[in-house]
Length: 142
Image (cartoon, rainbow, N blue to C red):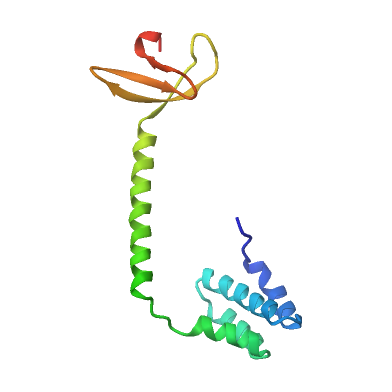
């Protein structure tokens, strides 16, 4: 997982960013500061601080301007976001269904540890699948 800038990073991002020799590093500092601003619900005082620093450097000003301009999403981007939302809903539903079919059973007669199992219908009875175990039935003494 990539590290993210947090509100505590703002001071050093705004102080250190303009001192960087490479334009890409100055843009990175500005983008990181603006990401923190966006995740913090875009407080106006912080935006003003960031804008003041951005005004001191062309690279930083360009990065700031990109964040501030309204951007219209393309049809492909909208469609992609809708597909992602649908896949996420489907996965969440499947995960919830899986979690509802999982129960904790134990202790087993031959071992005092607990294990998670999934109970699945098997004809007129149910089969219990232990983790890494052969399928067990209720006649096995569970």
